[in-house]
Length: 173
Image: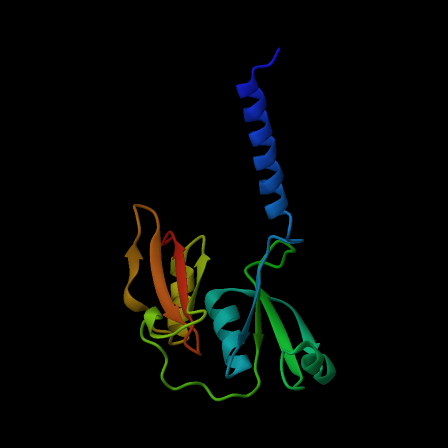
């Protein structure tokens, strides 16, 4: 015969498994897509594709009717360019769009100078090729970067054309 303690332990374990599985089943995908409004779409595509090394996965248009009905805008259509770190179904989406707004001339110097999304982190196989491409584009490395994180990994900080901080981490070679 099972002891009452074993029965209680079994019940608690079953409840924990049930609640853990239930809380993790609310999402149909484990990916996050981020939408970024930029001042100059071509300049941002150049930075992210030719500088950082992202790939353009696809484009889509949000038409006037949907933008208004969905609450995304007050009826302004926009073309969205979807970038990924690799063109696969299992890669997060970095969605760039522009409404022709002027760039804020006062880019933050540090992440604490604003609210909302201030930075993203991208892990790379080798930093030196990315650093070379960014320097060729005139992108300034911030701080004293590359900065060693440990024996193998380094950290580089840059800003995109609109001021979003991009943390790049990986080995130098």
